[in-house]
Length: 338
Image (cartoon, rainbow, N blue to C red; front, side):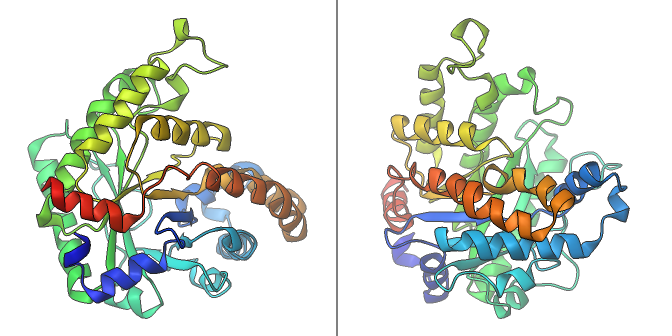
């Protein structure tokens, strides 16, 4: 709750927010996802993609777009050089989890970066520490028990380090393609139940980072008539409202790799639902189209693209944050709910 936050956590949350107390942050902590796209564009295998590409791409994007962001999320493996080039008014979140998951083990179990700690990340200038958790309330009890214990340990570590703790929840199903229609039917309940779980005080989470409670690719839109959609816009608004009401913590939306147009449509639905979200941590919806330009045409052309299209993308997201609530107001309301 806002009144119970320590000075370090409060300072960190203020550091990643704009003057309104809204988090308008840029996400660029991707590692394996960047390698895959670079590999596809270049013809290299994933293992052949030079690490220097990740470092340079992050530096250029950070320098170009953080003047329009309240903060940037980076990874300490390839992103620290970029962190030093961010706009002076932009805060810093650092990822603490290893990229991806072990595919030979069921459950998409999370792993922390070796050689790092919440205290060490704070020493690098992090206003907040973020971990990503693949989570499904429909998974087996043992899998979820291990994940819950893991989040609780990270929460305690951040509490000891007195640094703000952001938990990113990526919902999935152990036996269903999360990009398909079958999971799209389950997603509203899966998102809402996940929010309910990780708002519990035992986890010591300060801000939840969640996806839209509907897969926007299956929501009625000008390009998808109601007869072909899984969710009408009215139904989608209802799902946004229920997920928001389930939260007793400040929460922000992630873009989940969708297009800029689709992400701002999700924010429009959230606003219409009266969702009490406190902003966004938006990544690929802002800069993903610049990746092939970087590989094929080089750094200078990427800078030109970012100065035009990249800036338009991030400003488009920012323009749809009018309905966002200050994180501290959401925390105060959460205290009343509890």
